[in-house]
Image (cartoon, rainbow, N blue to C red; front, top):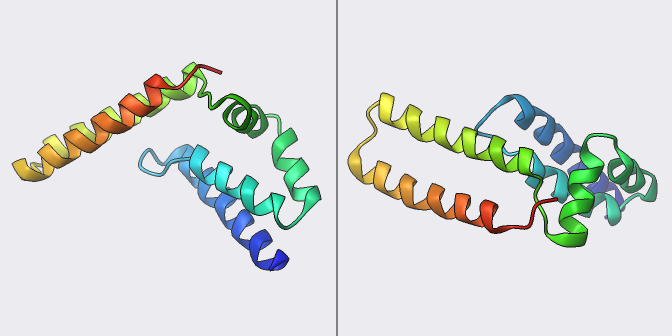
Length: 117
């Protein structure tokens, strides 16, 4: 199982890195999942992601305080707005826009009600 967890953790890190450049793919949830997999597979990989200069502080903020940094909140808000705007531009059906508006509003509500890191 340790090898499976390690592979899943590395896959999550790869998806998180892709999510840095693609606005539709989230980064932090994949990194949090990778942290879980590394904690169950490899102390070395777990220590690497926790002490990583870029990813480590976000992960520790979430683990210790359930906090999201203000810059991450703003980036998420911008990405969500861009996705909704693309749906409007490409003429998504009104029922899809309604569902999307409700779901994305709930996501934004969750993000902005978390403490700031």
